[in-house]
Amino acid sequence: DLARLHDTGSTATILHQGEDGRGALMLLRLPDDTPTPVHNHNTWGVAVVIEGTNRYWRWERLDDGSDPDRAELRLGEVFEHGPGEYVMWGDPPHDLHAQQGMDGAAYEFVFFGRNPNLQPRAYFDPETGRVTCAAAADSAGMLNPAG
Image (cartoon, rainbow, N blue to C red; front, side, top):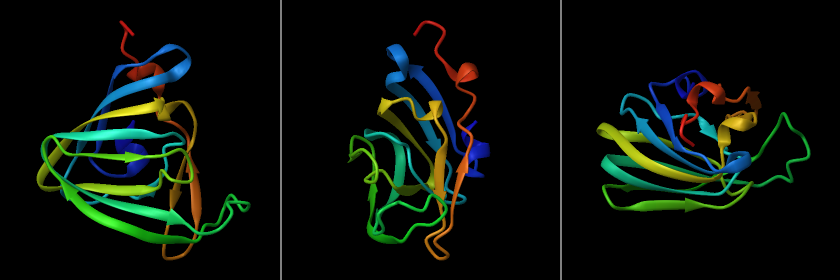
């Protein structure tokens, strides 16, 4: 339930998932009304826009991550990409980002090294340094029955 996790109108559909949650392919919809909060995915991935334009904020974690409730973040880069363009990210801590559709919803195919819905996600407030964790989406309801 991505809308609940992000508190936006974002949606995600799992199109395929490999054994043990490895290699998840999703279709993501990002509305243009508000950006997602800064969050992680606990895995590496690549996203390619198939329709619309996506604004992407890449964040860098400056602390060592030893305090699970606090984080010091710095905005690394902001860019927009459209159909056929992609963004890649590495394993944590290199997976911190926020994103938003521009001038209408953006749709992406996203390939994750592991299904990000199988473990809790961290959400970051860059202004206060506060980190909160949210229970993972109900992956049982999102799995591809053929996959």
